[in-house]
Image (cartoon, rainbow, N blue to C red; front, side, top):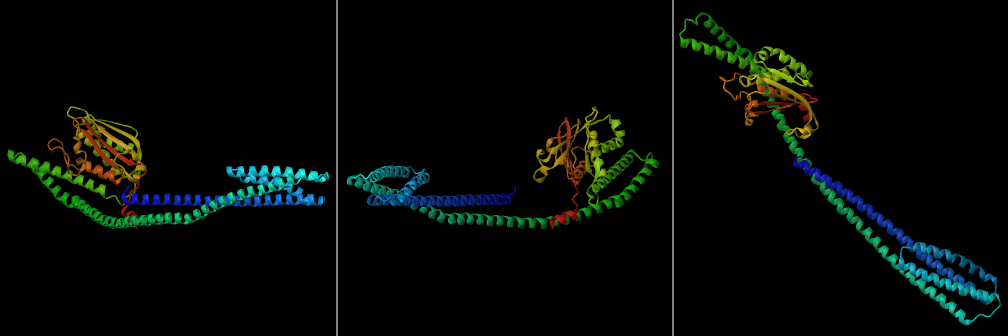
Length: 476
């Protein structure tokens, strides 16, 4: 991955992480605020219930005094109403403060005091009903018990109020910090987005410059192809005609005057004839090479490589029989391409293996085929790693070559051996490389001296010719 894209990716991922943190922090803070509000509401309920409890105890006290003074049952009605509600209020308070051990202890103390107070009050009312005198000391103890209940409830309420104030302070602090968290995280996210935009802008400018350079290279390539076509025209017309005359006149000399020439003249005439033949072969190979370049107006066909191999074997049957060569092949795939160029590819590879066979050893050529993913081919990277390729391997038992010449052999006019040892023009493998390029594929070679050579071909399983017009569309 290129550095700008890496930086952009890191920036966007950081933004996403910050936004997630912002979301989580906001959720937690809002949840805490709601929790504080629930706790505050619960504290208010506790305090209200506490006030209600004291109020009911006062009602009980008032009802008791009224009855003791007047002995009228009218005053017992509020007493019993308050008596019935006190138990429910205490139960509600127990539920509300169950998670606060100190308040639970205080409430239990209040509950015991109320129980003692109720017993004393019930005893006084019973004595009043039986028309018996009530000891003043008992009344004084009853009043002291009520005062003790009030004091305990005041302590209970003060503790609850302190809890309420603490929770309210925490809520205010939480609400105060939330905007700061949101602002800081938002600023960081905005900063990273600006940085990411800067990287994208930088990469866009580079892409625009690259596009311009690519357009210039396309223009140069079109001019180069045009010049190559002109060269092919010159080679096929202007060069072949004088060469034909040279061969024609040298042929006349060979037929009519060869015997009359001295040895030196005969040798010179033989050299002229051989040089003309070599020149003819060179022109034919250059024409073949130029035809592998000029393909932009053609469309791919569906080609069965098994049939291509059969046609090449048929065309080379005389040479194969003469050299006692054997070709062993697996089932080959069906690819998309140009029939003529693929035939030329197979022809050059097979003829190359036969040409560079070991002396006194029958050539053996093995052709294997398999499917491979782009990610499993070491020199393929980028988007093509996800593509599938047909891998063909041509392996022979010839003289091979040193590994440091693996790339040089595909350069046009490059030869590893002299013409005296092996004939040829040094164009065949260059044609093979150009053919594979035309089919959006790859070719490379492996070899060892006296152990043969292997040529690896990689055809994309689905292929397409990218024309100059399509490149222009992609650019714009």
